[in-house]
Length: 212
Image (cartoon, rainbow, N blue to C red):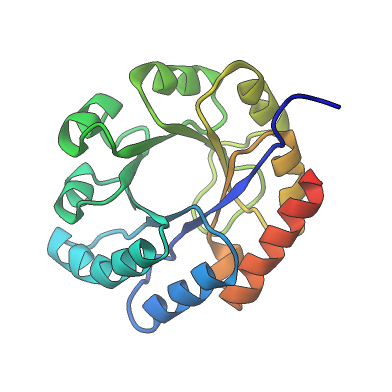
């Protein structure tokens, strides 16, 4: 028998670009289908006022379910909303800037692509998690970097900070990433491009099966 704790891997939902219309109802359905750790608001080319208006019901849905509400790219919007954290791309400001604006309790994540160097820098700067990817082809955004599952294993072996896998992840391919060492799987299209509740359930079943 090993004394090591059982590996866990949680879902981290990323919004589609359009979060208007019936999206709040869809988010509630997804979060009620199976456990989800975090939700990231990812909207582009909206002024902050409009983004905040769209965020309000989504943030409430997450709060009711104890799901972390993370804002993509914008430290200013995260501060305005009192969000649980912010996810920074490599050109979205520094961990230190985010920490000063959002406080010690905020969850700050950093996109590190396929780079061990960027991940170590983020960890040293005080990031709460690092995100690697894309692991698979994705239509959600343009892929410039391709990461291999071994990167997750390397990180998990050496560092305590959680790692997130992102990019083209589906219920059919997520098991290998969970096994390799991902603490979280960031998913978007595979959930929102169909029945969100069924997709979240399928992800949870696939992850549990991979780690059993």
